[in-house]
Length: 105
Image (cartoon, rainbow, N blue to C red):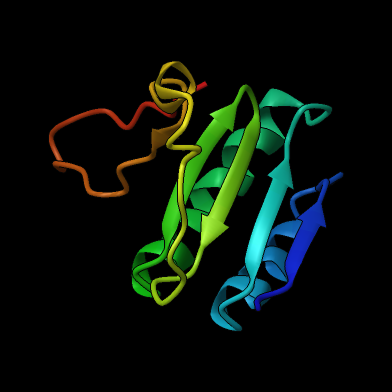
């Protein structure tokens, strides 16, 4: 069973700690609800690189809440309630260089 780490970054410097957890293949619950929009975007941009390199998954189950799930960890998106299944977005970290990157809020 994997540990789940809950993080509520208060500054950009906290993103370094988040990346270390991603590298260690920890499951992360990242709460950006009280973050300034600039910090919010910088943190997401910074950790997205680590998530992409580790082939992890980044889920957006609620506004300003993100889950980082390691590649080897299987998970379920509450299969009993199909309505809620549509509300959980898998954030696509692949992008075309010509496209503008727009985070899902």
